[in-house]
Length: 249
Image (cartoon, rainbow, N blue to C red; front, side, top):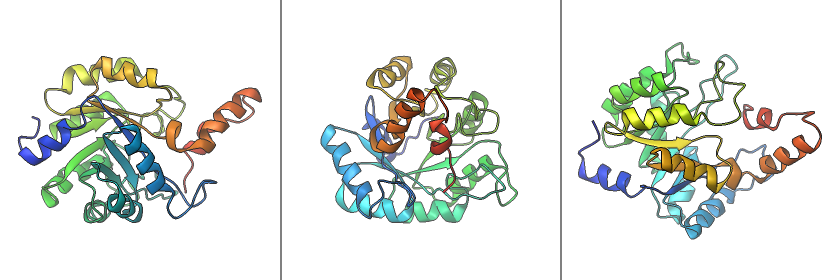
């Protein structure tokens, strides 16, 4: 069931039909600078975005100091023995919350974590330990979405479609599967589209299918990956730009 908490509901409803811009940068990105994510977030607000998605407590804190928009926070932590990297522990979730994010995004797939647990089992723990937070379940398929909603996720989205072993070959969104999520889950949670959206038309298709809002990142805030999509195609796909997008940092 959707949250009945007045504060959470007001924030979630403020996202309706809008664009959430993912403002993220890694230190090995060619566009990296200390304040680049703040500039990205300011540009997103100027454009009319309804929210921001950001990575690491440090970058979340910097954005919240300058940009008054709802923020979906996460903490990417990579390990060689797992593909689970989005806010994989309770400690990481607490750091995201303490940095100022109103919404915590975490991996809710069935993958095994570095700690030897099933990623999605963290969701009910975070819900119990940080009850004030809005929880965004990042999933890779419909079944994971159903599980996350049944276990208390406020928001669910196919963020990790294309980032698990079973879906690593994917480059485009599965709109049919996303429409199924919207149809079956929108009465219980907020379904937000994230992943593989590259044009305004892509985003509008998702709103038409029932998305509460859409998140767009690489196509807006990672120009090196946008350029690489062009280069890879012009070179006859000697390389695949998505290898760079999926790389561990």
